[in-house]
Length: 365
Image (cartoon, rainbow, N blue to C red; front, side, top):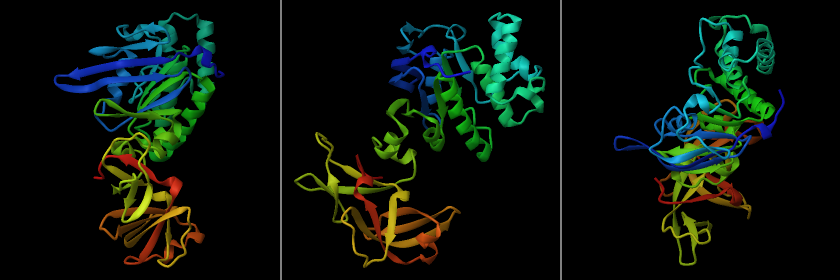
């Protein structure tokens, strides 16, 4: 099976609203998914991401708004007529059927001839590396193998859209990380438009072409993993994607923003917000002795170490700044970084490259 994005469909979600009583599960959400794209819906539990996925699949009907696959309006079309492949959180495999029979089930429903059915199932099992498992029973498979069966069943009939609802959540950490790469490679191979739901930010960053962050039923931000991580739109996105420390900024008459008397940048052009916050990613910091000569490409703050936590490949250095705000730095533990020399109570300069500074609107909290 080779990639063919021309056989995929775009998805257009326009002003989609869904309420349960007085609660907005979705509030006028609009998202466009390109044909062949891998888009992840990311958000905490109860944010509305699964509600949105199920609306795209046709399992719940929105109160208002529109869903289109390509040029076709499918808003009120029942699930079985939408032609999407679906992978559920619990896989929803049939325990009384063999691996082959599970994968063949969508083809059986579509009355595909026996010879073609066998060929398609064989190719699908080859794609997910389960060629030798066709006659196995489902209860003889590991979690990762069951997940592959569910994937093969979802794409065996050639859907133009593939929807996945937290399919890796039941796997252990090591297998989950392996499957993330396998899914990314499988998407590249198939080229099918994919919408994937997760609450795991690292999973979203690993797998996605773009990420749509959902918060309280609303679209908080959409962009590539790099855009979301390096330029979060607000406090929620910055705190949900990656680790961050937040510091309140003061603004002078010329529009320059300061923290602890140090200039960190200017108010973005055409911005009208009164309050601004400095966001610092812990892995982008460097630690220096107090009297170190300063690099003009960096911004420096003074602080004191309050806690050290060794985590193998990295160490967390917790600090308190001169104004009482807390800062977390994450240092690589390779020999050259000399992390072992750090001590609780030690005074240090904390440096960050000017281009790594992130400024968002709103007050620090």
